[in-house]
Image (cartoon, rainbow, N blue to C red; front, side, top):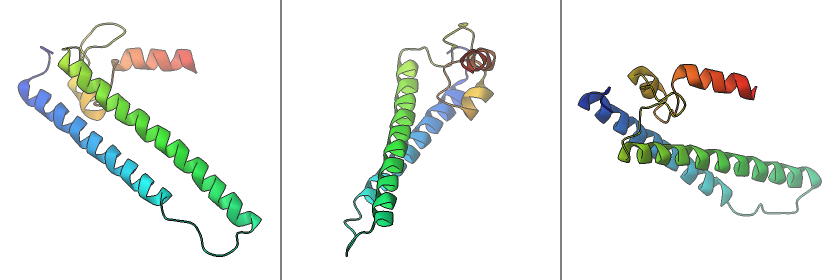
Length: 120
């Protein structure tokens, strides 16, 4: 990462740490909301539908947060391997401002935009 200063490097590590902590809090909160216990009294069809919808939503959110956490861990791995901040497509340095805005970025803005156009 020769294109990043030590201060930028420190800032990016801190941003990844903050993102990691935020995601873990969300996962913890999601787990707590799933263990509120059974509802007392008989359940009608609307209550059952609400519970099923809540369970599906929780599952979707759980997967989302796990994916986000995996991205943070992958960014840390790239840091450890000296590959962080280098675009995986073109090999050019990813600008600090992009990394600051998106610390888990694997591609420069041009390559990311090109990828999104191809996938759209």
